[in-house]
Figure 1 (cartoon, rainbow, N blue to C red):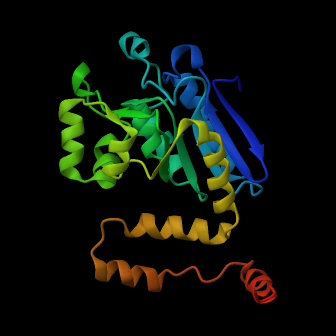
Figure 2 (cartoon, rainbow, N blue to C red):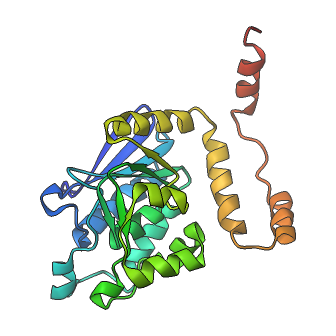
Length: 248
């Protein structure tokens, strides 16, 4: 593997970095291939409890490399990009998209495949498929309306409007916005907060939310009961440690 997507591990947190800063991390087949390899490796790595996906240099990513599109991309199979993002989305551990600077179109599709977006104030989001007479095939039509609602998704898709981090937070696209000067610390703090909790619960909760998304309430409640995964192997230790804490 080269260095189009890098991985750095620290105390259970894996940071995957899109690494074409000279091209604003514009997305190519090669980058997706390396992202897919890293994600596949993470399925087998029990030392990692949380994943951050971010971009090197000035931004998260300016989006799909238009030069690659114009030249005609050679992909292993139809739907391969979408399949790669689905693989990341179903990773049985939390995935955070840490976004600063540009996050447009294909890059937004990548970020939406994470569990949620942590945005720096400098982050800018947009879907420009319509600007270039393109249609989404990486998941925008499915993930964006689930995140922000159908009407807001239509507005963003029809206008190709670029929105600020504040607007992204207002519509529910970004889960949290922090000043750029605090971005690195916020990523680390959020990772530690997630890692402090049970990896068993994280994996089970992701599967539960995935299985019941868009179900009616009664069938969702029934699924929760009938498919309950029970308690994790660390339950007794966690409760014991809490009960043993001195009372203030």
